Amino acid sequence: MKLTHAPNPVIGQHWVNVLAAAGIECELHNRYLTGALGEIPADQCAPELWLVDERDEALARRVLATAQSGPAPGTPPWKCHACGETLEPQFTACWRCGTLREAD
Ligand SMILES: [Zn+2]
Image (cartoon, helix red, strand yellow):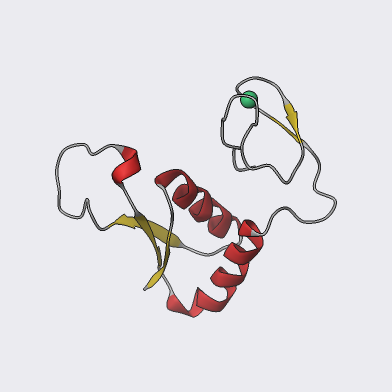
């Protein structure tokens, strides 16, 4: 079943990783690419997040809500893997070089 759609493929993949870490199986689908061959620039994609098992829906929505509302209290700072900048946990991307935080 379709859970939600992600604003871009990077965030979509992040959500897949977050859900996988919570033990929820899901897939990224792209309505514009279904059945299409060839490459389309990533910014033209609007990926959809599909749950493999719809019984996971309530938990999945909770996990995503948590993921979008910021880090849990006590989350340590993280280090940008591209430029080495140390960043506060509420940032999801490096303010210095724009690199997105990698999933742990
Ligand atoms: Zn950086």
